[in-house]
Image (spheres, rainbow, N blue to C red):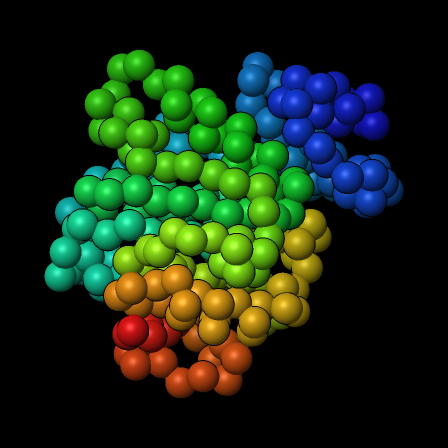
Length: 246
Ligand SMILES: C[S@@+](CC[C@H](N)C(=O)[O-])C[C@H]1O[C@@H](n2cnc3c(N)ncnc32)[C@H](O)[C@@H]1O
């Protein structure tokens, strides 16, 4: 297993720190590169996750007729304009960013600090950028970019400004009462990421770099980030989007 991870590091020319390797090594999880697809396996369940923006499921998601009426789209402000430059400061597996890039006429910058999430996302993005037979996916690929950095560090140092800064850090109640597929992905986040205990500090930093709004995705019962009450809330069955208008 250690050999496979080290091979992957060599191929991708990226650093996965030794702490992460030994955590994966000792655990139920292992990373494998199969036919250019990086997969995180959970041995006990014989299941895996990977980032595939080209799957039928991903295509279906971005082509849903009511997409602009979904809470996430309204929270971002797509019902008002599609010309939004977005910073997804906690990109994870890029599922939300993929939706944003399918709607916006501008760009989406994804930040991810966890080396395993970053590696899976980078691999998915690379394969999206290689698509030759789907114009919609090619347009989305042009709008998406990714950096392996802590969002707090990025927000403190960047001179860029964004129309919208989006935050979806891990919260301890997440993963409860969800579908099997979501549970699998949440189990991955719980294992590799844990809870993002330091996420409160991101809110003020995000305010400083957002020109229109900051949007925070939370579990529906989670407290507000940094205990700050938002301007608007969109509450669904499991999640809540807290919108801070600048
Ligand atoms: C719940 S997941 C995000 C899921 C994502 N919205 C999606 O659609 O796949 C939270 C992710 O945010 C990342 N994260 C949390 N705090 C961060 C920070 N300060 N800087 C960069 N990434 C961060 C975690 O490593 C984790 O991968």
